Image (cartoon, rainbow, N blue to C red; front, side, top):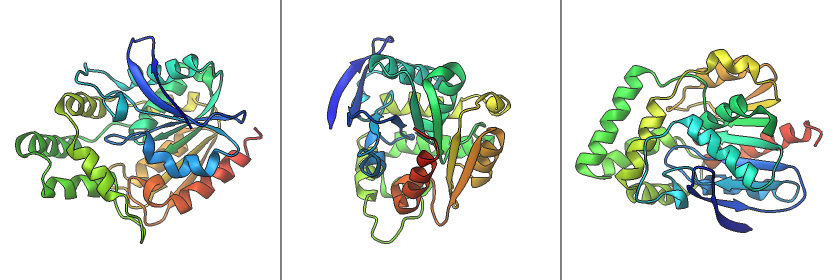
Length: 269
């Protein structure tokens, strides 16, 4: 797998991984507090037929630095467009999980010509409800005050990962990653999350084929919001992942990957 930093037109360095190859391009955008590695199972399943690119967003993974100015998901959508431009990719299938879905949808709105299809996992077009914002602000305040203790770890794990299948052992990797997160990256990223705008009324303009995948038990983005997203997109298919929470592509990849493969096979690439 090829790996290198890039310089976007915003002069920011981004880390990405690229399997290379001549197949159709798929670009994976991760969720909040995650990084490009959350799609390892999907990349492994697809790389024989597709060129798979995964990247770390602002404030996350190897892109994170000791400085992060306020930003929004339109900025992140531009980062994604810059990545495609840097790699001389004219069109790609965009995969976005949660936060990655927020920026992916906005990329489809602001730069539709680069999008050949969309795969949206445990995400939504709407805003975070005020009670949820209040609850998450409480978690952030607790994190800043007391550090990433066992109680906070359990709360965040339940929200961001959710139920897991027997034998899934990835939780310790992610909790260690969260414990090492610096507030300089955490706070602007959190603010982007809770301050995003509602683009539900614009979904009808996104006409590319879309697959919407959602965990049945998602505590961060309720499945009703995923269903609403699929209904708002004029050319979409909805797949529910039984027993899965927010990170269905991580915890239930045995159900998510076949759904993705089926969708891709119907695109005619």
